[in-house]
Amino acid sequence: MEEDVLEDKDLGHDGDAGALWDAMYRSRDRVWSGNPNVQLVAEASDLEPGTALDLGCGEGADALWLAGRGWRVTAVDVSAVALERAARHGAASPHGARVRWIYDDVAAWTGLGTFDLVSAQYLHSPLLPWTTSLRTAEQCASVGGTLLMVGHHPDGLAPWSHHTDPKPYFTPEQLAAELRPDQWLIQVLESRPREITGHDGQHATIQDTVLRARRIA
Ligand SMILES: C[S@@+](CC[C@H](N)C(=O)[O-])C[C@H]1O[C@@H](n2cnc3c(N)ncnc32)[C@H](O)[C@@H]1O
Image 1 (cartoon, protein in one colour):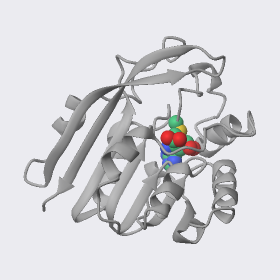
Image 2 (cartoon, protein in one colour; image 1 turned 90 degrees about the horizontal axis):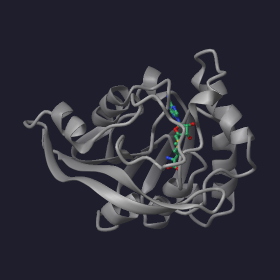
Image 3 (tube, protein in one colour; image 1 turned 90 degrees about the vertical axis):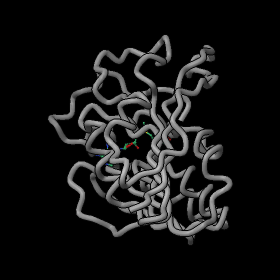
């Protein structure tokens, strides 16, 4: 993703995550660039392909990038509009057959088994505490598997962002404090700068929180 597009003023959703995100996606023909997220590319390029779960897959660019590298991908989102676009991109891609697109809510998880890689990229939502996303992501990683959580650092948001609610955002230290050391080997824990361009062409350096951990038990 390039930047925040969901602002606090958009909260006309009556607590329905699908309705909230469908409205955001319907506001533009295409919301994200279609390129994989840079922190995913940085952290997953060297991993041996296996099964992957992309939580909050949006329009599907990360899932299709993983599929192109040989992963069998399960890509989940709560927005039917986003999934319809993702499936369309998948149908046009030579790697689309390696992705299954699933409508589900990370906050009411029913379970899809465990995966060699669980990736959550900017899975921020005013209706979704980050601790809930982390718990779901954790339980979906197989022993020996990798957890990759990437998000906006609460102190490094875009200057034009209108977010006032810090709850969806997390620091590396907050993530690390939630992981049991007897279950997880933390391999990367960083606040990482990233150059972005806003929808009006403005530039800024923001900070990403990046956690990569291997499940050891
Ligand atoms: C900020 S976007 C990021 C999309 C994509 N990961 C990317 O980086 O381009 C957050 C995504 O999470 C999805 N999402 C929000 N709440 C969710 C939930 N409770 N369960 C599943 N997906 C959710 C949204 O529909 C949206 O596609």
